[in-house]
Length: 314
Image (cartoon, rainbow, N blue to C red; front, side, top):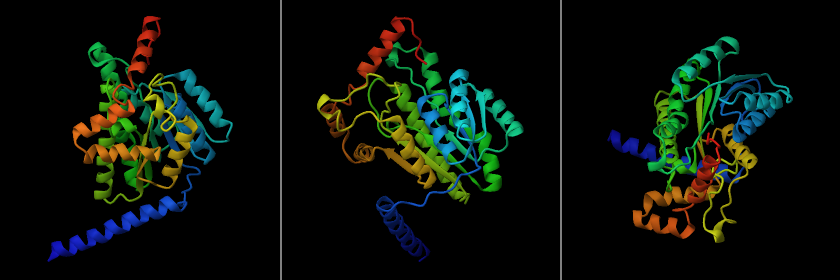
């Protein structure tokens, strides 16, 4: 009898959740105020990280900026300070666990407790698996995936103490479905998605309802990270690389609306769903039609040319 009652309650919750999602899609959701919150952003010296910093600053949040590139990070800090918020920049190597823990201690001592954590930093080796040095493969996994564990362990305890906070994971559409020649990146982003979802379930199971999470899964963003990546010529206008500012603005709307997950553009929900529903061969046929099976080959070639000319892929 108890299981029947629980089943009915589950169906009611299911129906309510679906209807609520439909309403929020049609109507503009209420956005929360983050004025005065302390927001930490990783990878803040890069294109997306800088834009995230400026958007959070416009909302009145004070910033803690982490990046391995001190000069680029200081430039982001300078731009954010012009918007009237307090900014603290730190040079951190996210591939090193102790660097994260030690810098987190400095942040708590020098600035205060972080209430919004944006795990944005990301790297890619840009080499074919069998041609890629192990160190580059490990770096991708350390920065894109392992660092999420260490960042969360460093800042989640205080959020739990106050039952207040927000953790944002900037993953990728390639954490929902994969493509060829970027095994390191896909593996790291699948790991990031799995980590984020499991963490969200844990917070819900422990009834930490004041700690929100948002998973961001964008398509290829036009930051130069995947320069040269291209799908079938006839379809490039339908699914072009995303404008960085548009990507961040859409992400901010989801964060401020406390939306649990966002795919950018919405078209990315389709391959995510079909991957689970269609046979493997059907997905492969679709990939081949849109050129997704070989879309990374021009990108890999670009990286090889840069390396041949003496440039180092970061």
